[in-house]
Image 1 (cartoon, rainbow, N blue to C red):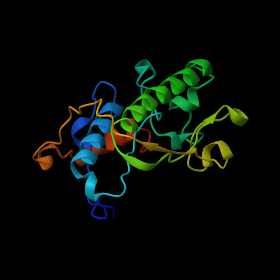
Image 2 (cartoon, one colour):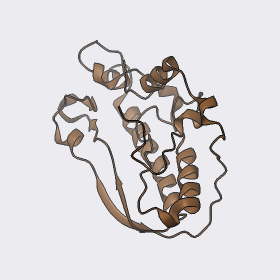
Image 3 (cartoon, helix red, strand yellow):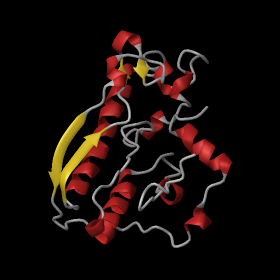
Length: 196
């Protein structure tokens, strides 16, 4: 089981910066922690991974779309999630607009991150692609072999710390005190579409 011991610093921001109203981790929380970590420890670090949840639903700019359960239930448990409902009870144009707006939302924070760390090489990528109506499909079910789901963007750039952002989010001193119990973890994973 993965416990983070492979990393010099392993900061599980979701444990203490979860937004209960939006049912996700705000992009700014991750940006703040990444900037602070890089500035405090960056001299001895040669790389860092920052995993933003967006553009994954729930969509921060359109919270009324909510969360709709596991994307992997697509086609197996009927109409129970946003992607199964797209084009039926939820207009496809609204979903696609919300997805694009969520992508813009997170890319604004990626830009802020790139302006507040020093790095000769930065890679911006994703853990999966996304179907947006190809063959009538939406989302990213694990068994969908479409190129739009399997191929991911890969952008290389650099970053220069202009010190224009001062992070406000601090990691709690006693992270164990913020440890979520198993039921909460399962609920959060479900909110993000990773669990049934």
